[in-house]
Image (cartoon, rainbow over all chains, first blue to last red; front, side, top):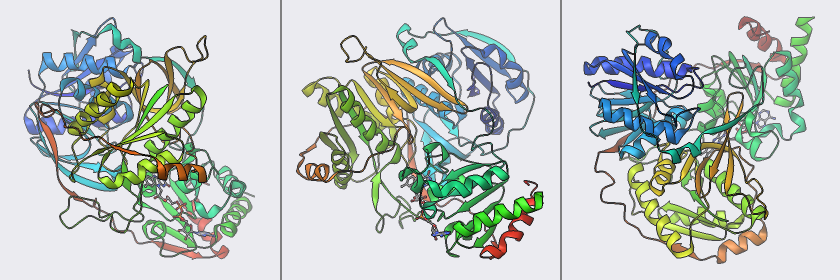
Length: 321
Length: 266
Ligand SMILES: Cc1cc2nc3c(=O)[nH]c(=O)nc-3n(C[C@H](O)[C@H](O)[C@H](O)COP(=O)(O)OP(=O)(O)OC[C@H]3O[C@@H](n4cnc5c(N)ncnc54)[C@H](O)[C@@H]3O)c2cc1C
């Protein structure tokens, strides 16, 4: 039976928000095609995802089983999806455009010899044309997709996840996964940070090239600490070795979504902006009133960051008493 | 070890990305160009592995002739050989790109032996298809994991490694660890290392290095089951913002803190 099949990217049973977004998008695509939404889940913890996936609109959850499916393994999971696609012949297979989502879709595409259009932001009702994101979202591409089974991923945050309950019937499918593919399974995990991270911090105080040195980030650290936030930076800063790459905001860094992003001494190049634009409020502190960061921000102060950042910290401390 | 690093030449736009009149390309007339950042780190990773374990590293790019600039940049930081797979103008779709790269890699391996490790970028900075490396690895029958931010070869008895590579992938709260049998492929991300600057000696070496041009054909069957094609490029819709200027200089500090209070982050 034909359907829109959503690849459930879960980690030992935990389904990320991005997959719920993909299910939400799948419901409108399936509606346009007059088809039901199905889901495919496999590996360790797959039996735990059914109720949640049903809640977001899957009529049927294909639980793919093989002795060679366990913890996340891009190659083995990709081959399992080939098995599911050949038994179910879906019209569309889709995932969220996350690391795992895109990786699994690419693995499926490579193995099935099909084209795959990553990070769509808008999809035509018949899924034969779409708009997709390039340059981390700074540029859009209109594209066509000509294939019997259409493989796409949706750029994260294209829609907000919303429930739309469906039957959520579980259907087990035994699939073939070559013994050799066990090679790419996760062997171990290293847990590093507990607590808030750059992507979850309510406040991010960020510095660019104008900060000038590793030491000169101390006042930004102080302000971030007063506000219960994290320090971020631009690529000019990581390239100079002043901060670790984990602090970089942008296309090749982290995408942040704080209540407020305080960007100091950052010009606002497109590749930085795409990482910052999800912020609910942006305050730019820059000596140049024409800087892109200033003209795109909701709030700005035209000032030297070396004077301004400590002045804000002082004022915060004074009010806290 | 024999290592191959794949790189793509991309323009380096600033405050906005301009599009050519035919809406098919990024207008890069007045822009500098660079190795796509993930791949620049792939080059550095290749150089570091060779420094540690010996052997030699090759850099390869598929693109227009001007990609020679990026290949020489890779040689200037320690790669020994460079190969250009020329495209004749138009950008290729991911299936065609992967197919041509497979043909080129097979030819290089026929001449000089199998690459123990092939390093891709996680995705190209411009088109961002998230698939070429995975397609190539599958075609070659090699293990492949994308999103890698750490590479290490566990010691074997003779100090030359035990035939595996340990690859770390960053996730929200830490790392996932993979252990791939060699020969393998990986897609790396910026942050795996801090690429070095070329030395004067490296720069001179890169000027003298020989550029190998390897013309290959994509497999005629690459599109047997369909294809994707770019119709046009466009700027994403922008929400116009009226910037509220809170003031000039340190006198604006109270206004800033008023805002923080209003947003409830104090
Ligand atoms: C493919 C690709 C991917 C990239 N990915 C990223 C990414 O993920 N993240 C990223 O950040 N960049 C990225 N970049 C780099 C990006 O294009 C810019 O080069 C970079 O963001 C510039 O950093 P900056 O704003 O700190 O420096 P600059 O552009 O040099 O800006 C410095 C700013 O500081 C202001 N200033 C100067 N003095 C002061 C002062 N005393 N007080 C206050 N303000 C002052 C200036 O007016 C200017 O606006 C990428 C580039 C490419 C090509």
